[in-house]
Length: 449
Image (cartoon, rainbow, N blue to C red):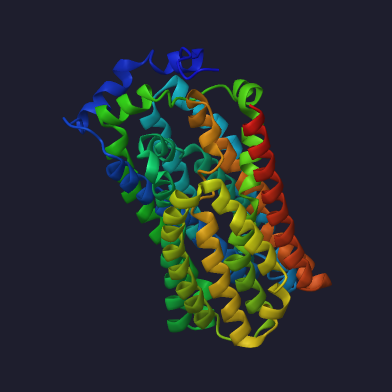
């Protein structure tokens, strides 16, 4: 289907409300052209705030929630229960994407983004104030689960189209470079979250940390959400941004229409990045839970090692942009999937190798993650026809997170604790093989088409 296809009913529905959005857009309307660099700033700010929320909850799931909400269980079982609740957000995320696409259809993209980030803020602040199991009993676990679902729905609803707009406006010879900019949000978010928890753990007693100290990062996450909301709205509400989205046909389409016309690209796109998403939690959340359960080393010290690792990740994300522009994004992802497959064979040896082995695992893992994750979002979603890209990119990302990362901490810790660390390596290997198969299929279908 050609890119000149007329707007669908959904798209036309968005334009039936020009007066609703006109006032908001005029607040920051300005003359001039929006450059890819300006769009990139909005992408980095938005993704960094989202990833900070993400990692604050992830770290708390490994270090706090087993004791605070599951004190009646063993430490291992409590952590597994906490990881089960952690995964609820990834199940809810595609639901949030679909629901908020409808909000944008009936109202405006500004209303959609504001509502989504409001739900995110309320859910995050709610966790900060949530009484523990000793106070509310099972009710506290139910509320925690609902708030986690709220975070997932808000995550899906916060899709603003900026990454797609950035990709479509990037110079042809620098698409890999611009594709990696949004991925920088992950190392930035982890760096801040890990730094906060490391500081609290190093300066508070265990009792104070579990009683009130762990809540502080959630307060900070709420504040960052507010700042990020205004930063993103300032860009979203400009007339130029709106015109660019309309010009590029970046509006919601029906999920059924998307799957009927571009379902192949959605599924291949979700699987192509599986190696990156599986590795994502195997170097961030899983080792943190393993060290807290089975190692005598300082958790604050281990978080500091992870902060060094995530610095390497940020550097490697940037390098991935340069490499992808030289050899292609798909070839970059394929090469890294092979390297991740090789790395998976050394997982048991490194994690069981004392502090030196564990540190090597973290530094190598984060480096590979940066090189791979830097291009995970753009290699296959670029195959979407233009008018399907807004919805297609969002759902592809949702499915990649759900399949590749949503259950990774739960599965990796569960199988490793019961059967040995080799099974965590097998889990990572399966993700790498799926990525290679999807990338190969994508290439063959592209040649055939």
